[in-house]
Length: 306
Image 1: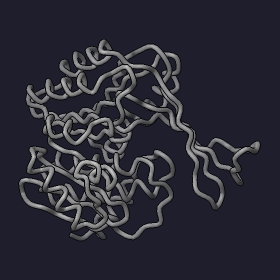
Image 2: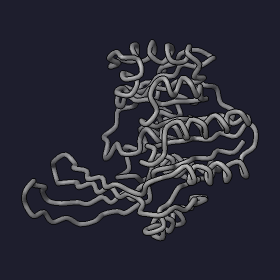
Image 3: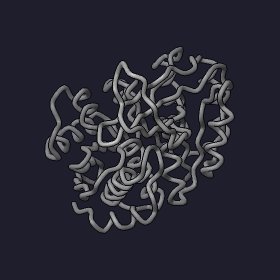
């Protein structure tokens, strides 16, 4: 079983440290990191950190792709680039000392059906029946949700296990595609079910509601509270360990990586959830989009209870 991640809207994540940040003033900052990002890329990076083989298929804008691909190469990510015109979008996050971070997100390239055609052809050339294909992140302007749903359904028809983690999909879109796994957070599941979800018990009910509509596994993350999973084996809750978070960026992506890592090793769904919480929590112990560390995951697994 191969794990293939698909990132239609990658990003270059720039993190800056400053003594302070004031609107309408000149601010001085030092760049602390510049990394290739995007939700699918983050999943691949977290899997690589624990030596889980995977392939990251990424749409890249040719104007600034060199530094992006160089970053992935440095991280040891097995990346297969699908080229298009334009720029990869950039996100600048400013971390003032003793204050909350501020993020600036810039637009990137516009997509097209031709780009999706190229991605579909490429993945059809490397994917086999039973492989996991994780489509994560937003859909670039220029590409319709209907074209992406058609992409998803074509992979599913060939026997792939689909993971969808994208705010571009509505609840009806997700239910129509009936993927193997989704991982909404509390805001996303509230939008899916049209009701507030703030406790593990509420999340359990919401997850099972969506599962009953055809999604095979529904994992809902509630940050510091933990996460729940509704699966064919039952409904499980895992409480998050107490940690001092440095950054929550990419934690949700890492939790998907944890689930897939455990699943690829033949573990039960309960253990997949536990591993997902360990990966997500460990990601909070690293700065920016840095992947979780092996030693943190191993330590946290010992502290997570159901």
